[in-house]
Length: 55
Image 1 (cartoon, one colour):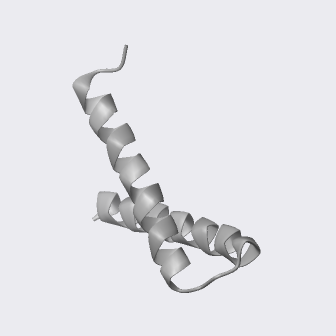
Image 2: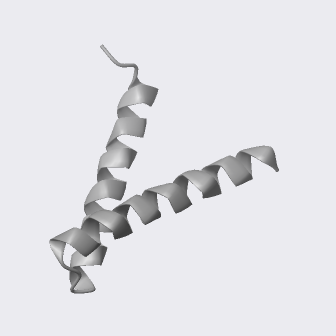
């Protein structure tokens, strides 16, 4: 069983995925374009987290 912190992190990741997909759909991207755009969002998100941790 996950700790409360682990559950919060998973919830945050799920919310990020849902809001990202909703945002990309609102831009009218095709399914193929959306896959690439979503990967870009994930990469940028991870990069931002890593930058903030090093500051």
